[in-house]
Length: 276
Image (spheres, rainbow, N blue to C red):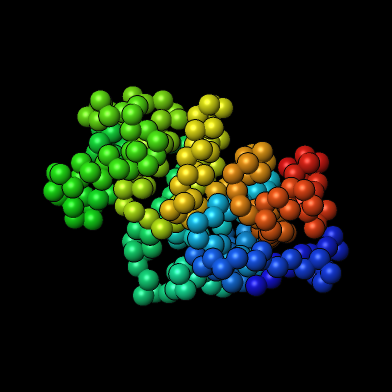
């Protein structure tokens, strides 16, 4: 799989061809092949080719409007909620094309959870926020639900902060706590992949640090794809980084390489703050 770099003249730069990093024996969770996406006449994603591997954190970076959030929302077909969207190409999740008509979106979203930029707890108690997904999937036994809620809250590093007020409104939590509650709600359905669209952009530095620590712990069990504007965050927590620009993948490599020795000058210019 190739992520082809385009030079400033618009021609393919053969010498700067960038291959997906060696997966070191890991299984690809997602394989994106020649993905194009249009909002009406706006060509938002252009020939995207990316392989994303299990038990890794992949950071998606790039300036505003470059296609980062569009791409991540395509991975669980949430982009289909936007009127006028058209796609071509393939996205294989565990070797199944998610655009296939036989692939029900509900099935996909059970395996691929999502955490949004702004915490979005339901107007329910802390307990009911976490129990919501399991209940939708038919679990009614109180003991089983109790176990799922506790396990999920512990997994999101928030159990000790909320265990004595599970029946209180989730809106009473701080912003950082609400985001970790949303992560717990995601964990409750036992996903395979967790998508995160700038999950700390609305949080204070202390809450951001807690989320980053949580994300690094979660990758032991899950594959995580995170969109971030924060270059330091990408460098701190991710295993691989993809740099998007104008709807294209300019460069995709091990995070250490992207930040220490990028192959494309546009990558270097972006991460050093020359634009974006």
